[in-house]
Length: 315
Image 1 (cartoon, one colour):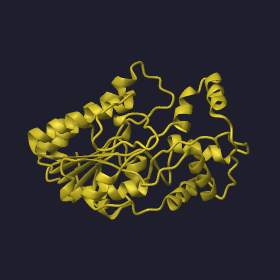
Image 2 (tube, one colour):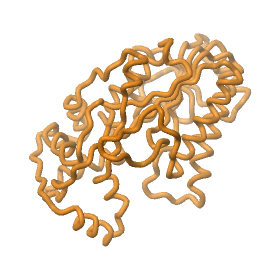
Image 3 (cartoon, one colour):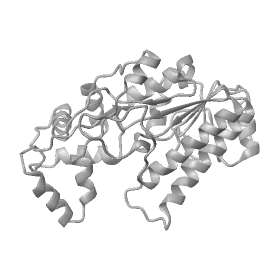
């Protein structure tokens, strides 16, 4: 294998993904070595490495100080696997722990794991956000695999002395976003009225710029050692507020009207889309006071600017 001669301070996984590509645009990752199975765009320092290739990982991770592990099997909208949980575990749990063990053996000082807020549950009561004191309560295969990885990482850290830093973001958005947030962009462009005006929920989101800023902060902040951090834009929005802001950011006219939620729920259930009701009408709030106090950190990017960037690759 033709390894690059210069050893980087930081190794990044998931460099070709949404978060990873934004991390690589930051000065802190300019000299980072990206490892994984997919080459990132416009970044030369890359090695094709499987997370179960023990000998190769040992060589790649020698002299590395920090691993930022952003690679994951994300939500699959149309799942076809016979056992989705085992598929998620293979990548998100087993792959993560294999990488962490080799990082610890190689003397890596800090391992930063991008988890998910969903390890704490699917919903919160309005006004009762998730906090750092909440226990793990994952409820789908994706979040179960992430929670199991968190538990295993803590054991590896305790046994090896390697710092473990866990970051739990809610729904991430920004330029190039895909998945559920991309569907919201498509929704507000439809020339139809949206019956969502009566929804009074609150949800936390995080722009990819704010998440990148927190990851960079955690690379060498002494107070990040062996801690878990919740992250958001620190500005919770209802579904109607979010859709209106998305529309305005893209210079579209929001067309939202009030419809009793019982009719909305019944209609979605009738067409077999009951799960969508929870995502549109349920609350999921995140309290980031602990993150702010421990790291002297505040989200530096405004929601309006980050929402505007979502349209840059769609208009």
